[in-house]
Image: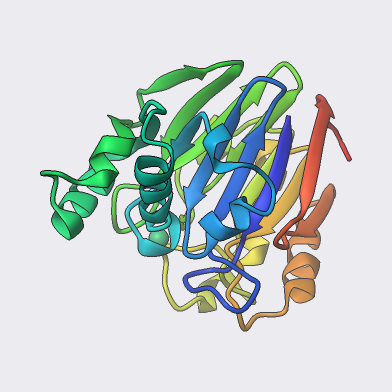
Length: 255
Ligand SMILES: [Zn+2]
């Protein structure tokens, strides 16, 4: 299984640095996980967009979902003979799109096949097993666990400290955790995101094989985030950067 970072900026993109978006690939499947601002263009630096087999969106905030719109236009008008692409997301994501663009005659709803997910949903997308957990965020948001025989990736999505998430994420080979803030948890400006040290604590609690920090606030120093997470998690910690590719070879084996 391969993880590619398309974008990892928290909240807004900056030049060359899109908002949240990732590719998960196996020999059989290509899944686009979160479609944040700027990630559709970044995706095309790695793959032909017609090879996307499925899309998973964690929540309705623009920096996680909006680039599925240009993707749908490329699909609908560039390749109208191809089937609709399944999109798995909380129901509120579809309601947001419907409010924005309507449904009748919409390329979005022609090109995409929406499926609602919640914490009880378990999916098999080709050789990927996918499950979800409710994040601690002001809108319905799902953390996502994707597993194959090569290992597992857990993506926290946007979240504050969420009761039960560590148990759910236990044993993740790679924890892709948001780290919006630096400094002491009690000083963070908003409860619905994590500090780097809280991300590190989550990695420690889950016995994660490796921690990758993402959703990094654009003006924060990623090296400081890595240092703060490393102070509470003994395993390997890196900060995501756009274009980064991580291969999961086997349990607790990444390169
Ligand atoms: Zn959010």
